Amino acid sequence: MVLEDDFLNKVSDLINQKDFKNLKIKFKDIHPYDLSEIIQNLKIDQRNEILTVLPDKILIELIPELPEEIQLEFVEILSPRLAARLLTSIPPDEMTDVLGDLTIESRRKIVSYFSKEKSSEARNLLKYPDDTAGGLMTTEFVALPMETTVSETIKYIRENTKDFEVVYYVYVLSNKKLIGVLSLKNLVLAASSSQLGNIMNPDVIKVPFDMDQEEVSHIIADYDLLSVPVVDNAQKLLGIVTVDDVIDVIEEEVTEDIAHLAGTEVKINKMVDAPAHLVVRARLPWLIFALIGGLLAGSVIEFFNETLSSVVLLAIFIPVIMSMGGNVGIQSSTVFVRGIAIGEIKEPWKYFFREIKIGLLMGLLVGITIGLIAHFWKGMPSLGFIVGASMFSTIILATTIGIAIPKMFDKLGVDPAISASPFVTTIEDIMGLLIYFSIATYLFIVI
Image (cartoon, rainbow, N blue to C red; front, side, top):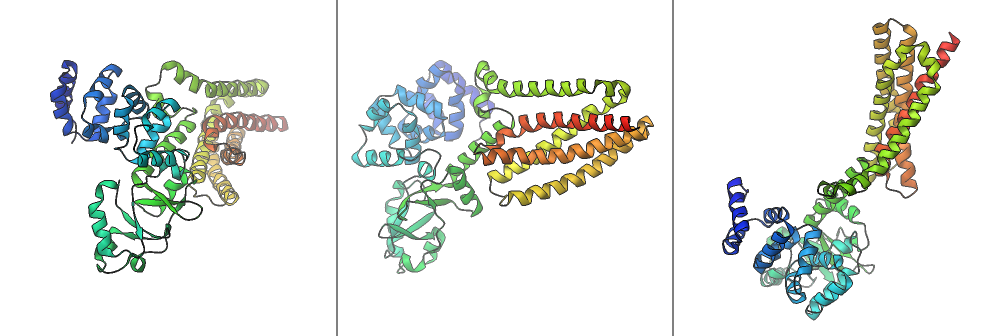
C-alpha cells in the first residue's frame, strides 16, 4: 500500500499516545519496507519501545528491511533467547548479516539458544566474508538427486515450502555435486515419471564461494538469472545467491562509486544523516587537495603575469579553457571507470587509443569554434589562434588524463573511482593554463 499523509498522521498520533494495541492493528496491513521507513524516522526511544511490543510475525518480516545499525541496536536490547527466536526465523543470509555485526560475546549468548542445526548453519555461513558469494548466499533452496522423479519433486516442494526462501529453480545433484538445473516452468511441463537427470539443463551457471559480490551481481544481471548457485572447490552445492540480494549489492556498489566521484570515502546514504563533523572530515581532505590545486593554478597565472599584462584579453578565455578541460576529463574518466567496474572494457589500451581519437575530433571541432568566436569577437586573428590551439590541446590532454590516471590507480590496486573528480579536474586545470599561456607567450615572442 502507498502510505498517505492521513494514514501517517494517524500512526504518528498512536505512537505519541503509546496506543500499542491499535498500532499493531495498523502495522499488520503495511508492507515491511514501508513499516521500516516509519520506524527509521522515529526517535531512538520511541523506535525501541515500538519494536519490543510488535508481534513476532511482523518483526520477522521487518528486521531484514531495517538498516544495519537499527537491526543491531534492536537485537542488542532484546534478551538473547528472544533475539535467537527472531533471528532463526528470518532467512539464513539475513540472520548471519545481523550476527556478523554483533560483538563476539553478544553473538555467543544468542547462538547458545539456537538449535543444533541452526547453530551449525550460522557457523558455516559466518566463515565467509560479507562481500563474497559465500557471504551473500542463503542455504534455503531446492536441491535433489538426479534420480528423483518430477512427481516426487513437486510433492517435496509442496511439503517443504516453508523451508525455502524462494523457489526459482530446482538444482540437480549427484553425490552432492551440482550437475544440473531445472526451472519450475520446465518441471511443471515435464512428464511426472521423468527423472530430473533426464530433463535437467547440464550447463549450470554457477559461482565459487569466494567470488566478489560485485562479480556475482554482474553474472546474475548478464544471464538474467533469478538466483545463482554457489559451489565449493569440489563443485558441491553450498547455497544460492538470489536476485533481491544482488539488487542490494548493486545499490551499495553504485552508491560507493558515486561517493568516490563526489570526492568522499563515506557512502552517500550514510552522509545524509551523519553528524556535521563526520561529513566535514570526509569531504575536507579532497577540498584541501582542490585548494592546493587552485593555488598551483594561481601560481601558473602569476608566472605568466607579463604575458597576461601584455594581452589582457587573454584573461577572458581562462574560465572557458579550464571549464572545458575539466568537463572533458570527467567525461572520459567516468565512462572509463564505469567500463572497468562492470567489465565492459576488456582491452584498456585499445579503448585508450579509441578515446584519444575521440579527443582529437572533439578538440578540433571545439577548438575551431572557440577560435573563430575569439577572432570575430575581439577582431584579433592571433588571439583566435591562441584560444583555438589551446582548446584543441587541452581537450586532447584532458581525454588522456581522464583515462591515464584511473588506469594508473587500477594498476596499483587502488579503486580508480577515487581519482575521478579531485585528481583529474585539478591536474587538468593546471595543465590547461600551462598550455594556454605557453602558446600565448611563444606566439607573442615570435611575433
